[in-house]
Image (cartoon, rainbow, N blue to C red; front, side):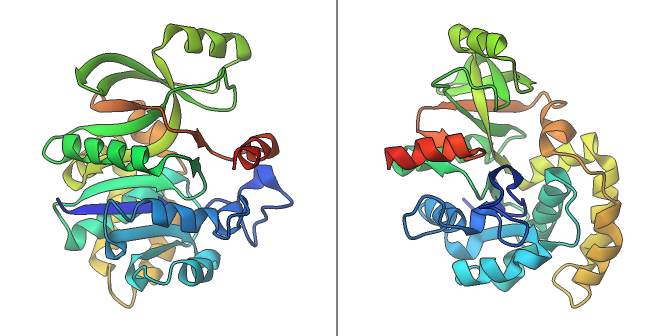
Amino acid sequence: MDTHVVIMAGGIGSRLFPISTPERPKQFIDLLKVGKTLFQLTVERFMPICPIEHIWVVTAEKYIHYVREQAPGIKPSHILAEPQGRNTAPAIAYACTKIAQHYPNANIVVAPSDAYIADNDNFVDTVKTALEFTTENSRIVTLGIVPTHPATEYGYIEAGKTVLRPIKKVLSFKEKPTEDVAEEYISDGRHFWNAGIFVWNQATIDAQLRKYAPGIMELMDKIQPHLYKADESDALRVYFPQCEKISIDYAVMEKSNDIFTIPCTFRWSDLGSFQALEKVQKEL
C-alpha cells in the first residue's frame, strides 16, 4: 500500500491568543509541556503508518522555517507553502494534486497538526482499517469521535448502518449544536464528533473535487504543469489566491454520497479553547 499523510499546519490558532499568535501559532508550540510541539507529536503519531519520506505538510509561507526546524526529516519538496490562506479545500486539492504527480496510486490520510490524541496504538489501528477500506474503491472515510459529553464546540457526524464493521455510512454532517441538541446527539448514539481526519485514495479525491469543486480543480490544472519546477511558487501565487475560500467539509463532505465513518474511542481534543487545553493538561 502506497500510503501518504498530509498534515494541515497553516492555521493561526486565534482562539488561544495570546499564547498562539499569527507569528507562532499553537501547532508549533509545546502546549502540553511534554518537550514536543503539537506538530511534532502529529508527525510522530503517523510514523507507524508511513515513512517520514511520505509525509507532506501544507502550511503558510511564513511557517516553513518552523516545519523545517521541528521535522527536519520531511522532504523540502513535501513542504507546501500556501501563498494565501484559502481554507482546507484548496489546500487539500493542492497537496493531492502534487502527490498524484509522483504517486498516482497513493492512499492518503489528511489530518490537522494541532489535535491531542491519547491512545496512539488505537489511533494507528483505526487509520490502518480506514486505509484498507479506501485502497481500491471510491469511498472516503472520516474519523468520528465517540462523544464523552454534549459538546457545543464541535461539528458532528450522523452515522447510519454499519457496512463493514466498524465502518458506518455517513448520513449527514451537523454544525455545532446548541446544548439541548448536543444532549440529543449524545443520547441517540448515532452522532460523533468530527475530528477533521480524512482517508481516501488519490483517484477518489480527484474525482470528488472535480465533481463538487470544479472551479478549484480548474485552477489546480493550471498549477499542475509547474509542480516540482523552479516556477512552482510563482504559479501558486497567480492561481491559488483565485481559489474559492471553502472548507473540505462544505466543498465535498456534505455533498458526496460516498462518505463513511469509523467511531473512535480514543481520547481526542482539538485544543481549541483554554478550557479544553487545561482539561488535557490535567490528564497528563
